[in-house]
Length: 258
Image 1 (cartoon, rainbow, N blue to C red):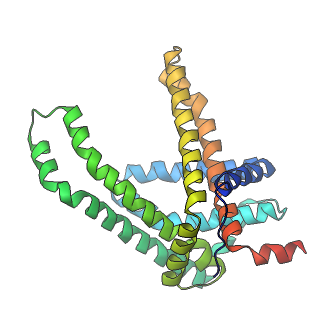
Image 2 (cartoon, rainbow, N blue to C red):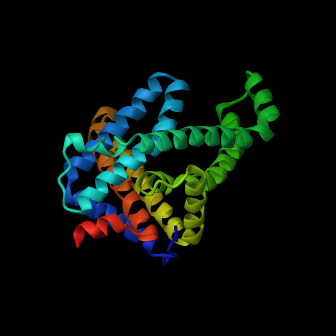
Image 3 (cartoon, rainbow, N blue to C red):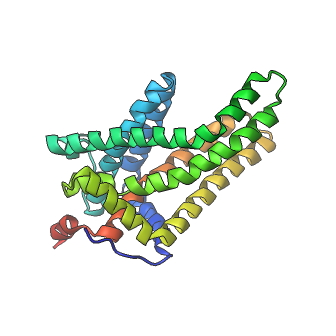
């Protein structure tokens, strides 16, 4: 697989394309955003085990939304039964599940590597009953920052991998390698992409604080912000497919359009 090297501004172009796809079928993508939010909340009901299951499902869920966006881009109307159609081939399912377990192991490894150098310091602090919440938060900043840096590399490994194993039947190891190379070649575009999304979600958080400052109750503020968060998440998920398409191309979609 040959990954294109794209200009810096493509990071913004992917978001614009995500918004365009959302405008084409807002109900379908809002539905997926809602389903994803429900799954995240359900995972919190079963601590540790629920989160682990959700992490394993991330590649599969990514492949589902990329397929949906490909069909939306081709002019098809997404119906309920179409969402799981990409998972019907057994080899595709098996590769995605395998990718999910590798992703889980990688996340656990990154968490261990980020925490291990600070275990002694954190243990002493947690055993100290007089430690203030501010001191505890300050102690956790280093491992959290290190985890964030390591997770960026992990994200690059898995960013394009679901589409590569699902659409091109590429072995998992090769898909991870191709994904890493593609993200490295387009690191400037991904930097802009990440900064734009960080700014967007920071704006929503600020809006929430302004609503509370204006005297709205937390319940009312949540009621106002929930559809905004779901729509924003839907645009984020929709932008995954344009990012893949512009880097690797999509010969199947192009053939359907001819």
